Amino acid sequence: MKITNSSTILFRNTMRITDGHLDGFRHAIAQAVAFAQEHGPQLMVEVFIDEERMLAHSFQLYRDSDAIRTHWRLSDPYIREVMEHCTVQHFEIFGEPDHDIVAALKTPDGESFSFTISPRLAGFNRLETSEWDESPS
Image 1 (spheres, rainbow, N blue to C red):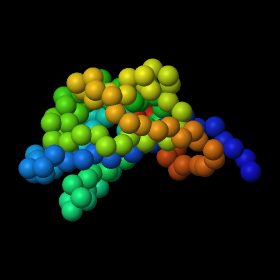
Image 2 (image 1 turned 30 degrees about the vertical axis):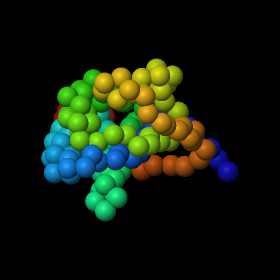
Image 3 (image 1 turned 45 degrees about the vertical axis):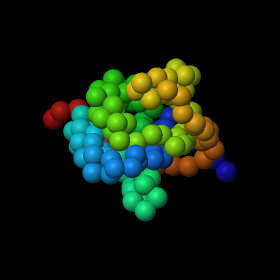
Image 4 (image 1 turned 90 degrees about the vertical axis):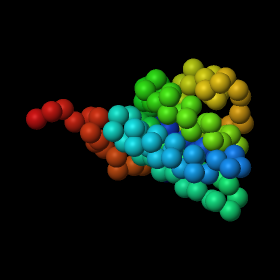
């Protein structure tokens, strides 16, 4: 088996939506995702909701730790708005982020939350280029 190098990092965030906040959560997430699509460095963002259990699952794929830093710097107001309507139930990191990324994993208010890190073993992606890599013609 050939193991290739990759700096990609996948976040999976499981959020518990606060009772009575479903509509506010939906609105805040929609705004955050629209902002990320327009301005963020993520290669992919997907959010899924389980209304019956009041859980949401967010998946975000980053090229590397620098992209995560950029996302945090640009998106802080949107992250804060989302967090007014939920709490982090569990956070999973797939890949190997820089140590400062791991040390900074807290809510916008500085609260800690549970997370796990699973280093990459093997794989590939077909995300060779993105609008962030392409130079203007």
